[in-house]
Amino acid sequence: MAAPFSLNWTLLDIASTKKDGSSLFSPEPLTSVLDHFNTGAKTRDKYHIDRQHRILVSCNVMLIEYYGRIILVDTGPPSADDSSVSNEQDFEAYSLSKLARTLRDHGVSPSHVTDVVLTSRDKDHAGGTIYSDRAGNYKVRFNKAKHYCHRSPNPRLRPQGTSQADFAFNLMEESGMLHYIEEETEIVPGIKIVPAFGPSAYSSMVQIDVGADRVIFTGDVVPTSYHITPKITSSFDDHPEITFQEKQACVAKSLNHGYLLAFSHSVAPKTCWVEEGKSGYMLRTHND
View 1 (cartoon, rainbow, N blue to C red):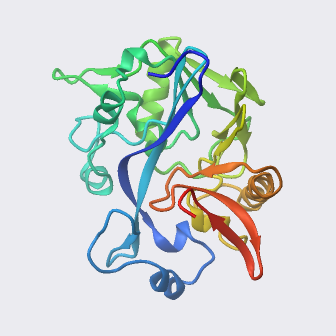
View 2: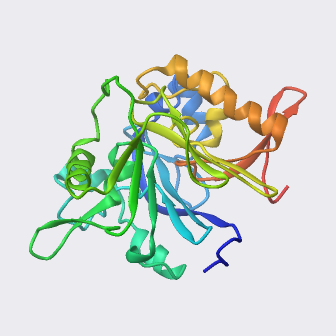
């Protein structure tokens, strides 16, 4: 555990999910996607594409310890062995969630978490907010935390993957744990939620400005490092043209102000800075 006013954050890979490659990396042609990704044996540090052209991507969450608070950004999907996974399609689409075990490895129990920020209402970001006990009763996992989510007046245009999260959101609302935000909201000094409107009506990012640390958890605005490329924007998004503008703003912050970008679905690299190169953007990681 970090000292109360010492910032400590880490990105945790807690699950994986399969997404249609052509949609996730639109408008890249499928042949180009196949050229870039691994079709052989799966490895931990490379993307893998299957015969149905689905790409296996990570579900990354951010754990922040600062100002006497323990903040969790996203919860990943529900665990595939939990009865809250509602059907065979869900079971096949998600891996076992390592959220509880990974938090425990970092000395954090669910009751320690003070704040949960959900950057999307979709299952791969918010499905881990609830669990079912042995009797099949659904419960809020982080029952002492204040939960935050951006909400705009516009409804979600593409409801895929939200039914599980809808149930979770209703449960959190009934328990008085859910707080919707409509504008930039500071949770603690130097850490704020930034609404996003491209991916969906419930999208957001988290920006950290504490001392020398400048970090943006990009959520679905820039889901992987590949999406830094201007021409690649997920066709899953409600408003891809707005996502493009929001993505360019993130890239500009990294280029001009040194923000480290942390990605919600990147296998590798999971974080990077963006720099100008002779032929376009270059990514610089901690290892460079």
